[in-house]
Image (tube, rainbow, N blue to C red):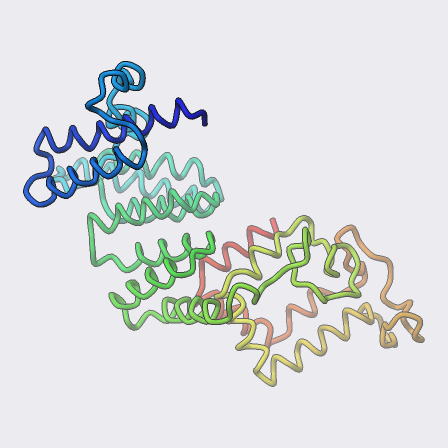
Amino acid sequence: MSKDQQDRLSYAILQHFQDLISSKAVNGEAAESMAVAVQCLTEALGVDLADPEHTTKLKVDQALQDLFDKSYPARPIPTKVVATKDEEAKANDLKDEGNELMKQNKYEEAIEKYTEAIEVVPVATYYCNRAAAYSKLTQHESAVKDANDALLLDPGYSKAYARMGFAHLNMNKLAEAEDAYSNALRLDPDNQSYKDNLDAVKEKINAGPNVMSQAPGSGMPPGMPGMPGMPGGFPNLGGMDFSQILNNPAFMNMAQQFMNDPNMQTAFTQMADQFMQGGGPGAGTGAPGAPGAEAMGALGPNGIPENLDLNAMMSNPALRSMAENFEAQNPEMMDQLRNQFR
């Protein structure tokens, strides 16, 4: 920015403060404090509203407030309305249509339906549902705005705080996520999912910023060599975004809990052994150069042995129990995982 542009901006800021004083938008001690601020800034910036030469050279055609309002129009604040039964029924039908589209992973179309429902009758649930759709599209800022609007309509809506926490978490705004989940739990203290998510966020905060440091470009933690297909040593599962999964504290908290379970340790030992052996009868350890290593078989397009019996692995009772328990407590996280595999 040139010196002339800086001075023009400084003049506009000083003029804005002076307009606030003149219009009595501020008064009393606030007006006195602002007048002092104008004097101090005049000296500091070398721009004087009372100088005719400065006025001729630096004054802009539009007030700073007008420029701001045009660039950032105010968002309508949702307010409760008294709706007719027909309006309520129409809005509810639109909401149901949005819910069906969500099940079909048609998130943009779902947003349109929720928006139509809001235009008929602004209801906290509709904003909250639209927030979920925005999160599915990774438009987390919009999700936060909708969660806030839901709370304006219903300050006791715990699910809106949970949606907000989920969005903040995905933007790695851990302090905001902690605050949102804390409020959700305050309103619904028996909700286990809120407890788990809040605990997971706190653990990630306490662990510090380096807890999930990743190898550049890999989306995975460093130091995991020995598996083909991806930088960092993990197979490329069809473009699956491991970084989003492994940076989710709820998932990592779940993984830690289950890996401490002896039954799960046994299950994963068997799974790892099967992976290295390729699931073939009489296979060896699978270690490079060891007898039986050839039993792993050819690698498929995803970097996984073609003869690996995934169906047998997922039939393991311990693994099935883990998945069922986690899905019951974290439905949004399970949706996220499923979408990664599509």
